[in-house]
Length: 165
Image (tube, rainbow, N blue to C red; front, side, top):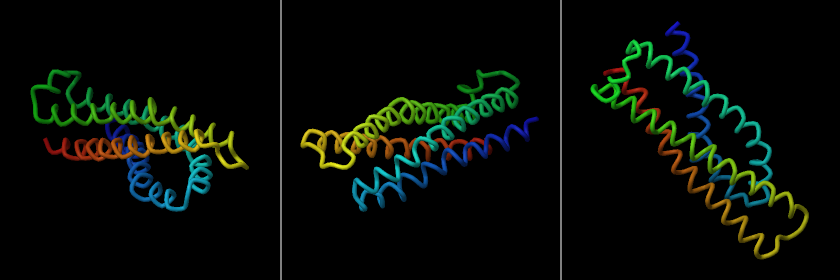
């Protein structure tokens, strides 16, 4: 059972982490250089599906991680604060929850607002206030994505390192 949970956990983690590791340092900077019209078109096609699948993967990732933690420590969660392994896992859990809050609690709603605004001005030049709002929303997503990227790296590192404690 544990091996199956671990396999599912790793696959979900690769999907979630890999998505961020590709989007933030590679795809998003190149799309920005191509301009808002292309960037907006590509992201509006990718993000609805990607957000859904990433959300589902997060649920699987967190569920399997919780189940494995309980199995490894026979339900003794006190070890999360009394052992090196526990502290490493705790940091990973906090990083994972932070990713979820920033990603789904802030970035996704901001992206939805950006998409709606982009659709409302499709086929015409944006008014100055619309252009400013587009820029603000894009900048917010960019900044938060970079922050989340750091938490993704922390979460991946802690889960890899925890295995050796």
